[in-house]
Length: 135
Image (cartoon, rainbow, N blue to C red):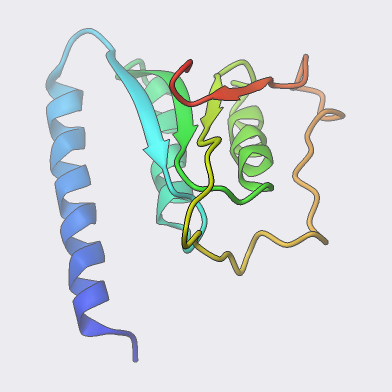
């Protein structure tokens, strides 16, 4: 069984996210969003990014950029792959460019996986990864 504190925390975060979505859905103009993520340890941020793409498809949000606040070298390619899957390969991706004392490990980002989507039909250009502050 998992850690009950972690389970409670994840449940709390999902509840707050769902309540926020209800507020977004009540808006008439798309809410402008810059999504900051630590997409490394688990898949909650992958799900959240997919939800944001769904809300953008419905005209509820406008995803302006995704900022990655960790240092794993494959994460920006993963973010680009998710954006490209949703036909939004032009969304800017910002990364943290300094060293971290204790970077998060990742069990699902490995060197054997290739998230490079340059040859996908809905990726018209290679997404340029920029400094997070610039995004």
